[in-house]
Image (tube, rainbow, N blue to C red; front, side):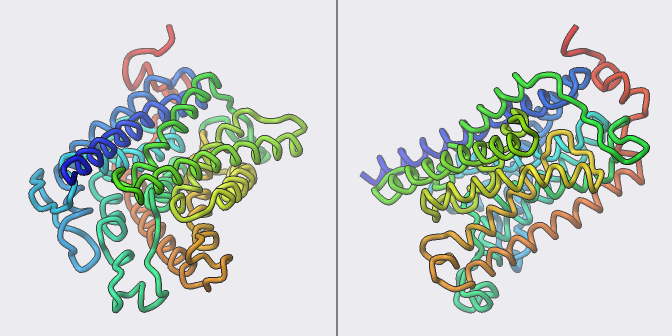
Length: 417
């Protein structure tokens, strides 16, 4: 029976990894649809780069950085492709694949905010650095057994807050990190040519295919059923069966309520419901529920979705119109702002230790502190990485290439003839 249970758990983990991998074309289609047709090859290529380089680098050293020896709680030891150090109950090869697809997702988030004006060679460099260094280290602090999740009675988190940081599937660890890096990357690059008028007003630059964007969001919605329930890493036994089913339900409810909130808000605000923003509203709900999908009730999931779907609209507008930061797909709002919101609301709405359930503010404090540390790490790394590249080689393509399209000049081929 134990052998059957282990086999079932392994198959479930690998199936979930396949679903999360399928999110990669979802991101590619969503980003391509929200941007102009002259850059489609470049965008599709970047999404392949994320997974190709992420797979190799995470296997080579990132997996060791994240899950290797404790390293005083800051970083694990590099493994250089040797997987024998891992002693978990599930096959290490399968667990590596499952963690690899999460790593690639964090790198992919950055692509959309920096679309249509980034040198392809420089994209390869910073995508590699995210998979090699930035994501595995903060992942070690949390999922790797590091100091933010050390539940020993004398650990810093338990002594300070009486709780450890909780992020079940990555609202903070994956999405807010990607969103912070996306925001800093977009600032370092500057806006696309023609995005802002001389008087400071923002000009819309429509994407070339809402059909592609919509298909991408449907694929992402489906892939999230591997992203969140798969993080249970087990399907055998009554506890795991119930947990997976619960996470499926909360994930879906948050996605639906996020989309509904954005649809009705844009209907009221702009007099017509915005389809493109509603697509992002669905993603906002998915990002928001990812931290607490295992510990909030179905009603809590709906609340998280409604809040994220509502805040999303104002966040995109504020970043674009007020801050004049050009984020073509809204990645910094969808993943950054809503990842932060979802993590904080987990501290409020968790049924067993959330503040709104009468359990005090210790768990909320642990969530807020962990989120702050993780995003500060991402911000510092982002500033060093993007401004370092800009200083040494330049991040941005010349004006002529940007005007005529990256596909021909960067790759020598067109998506549409």
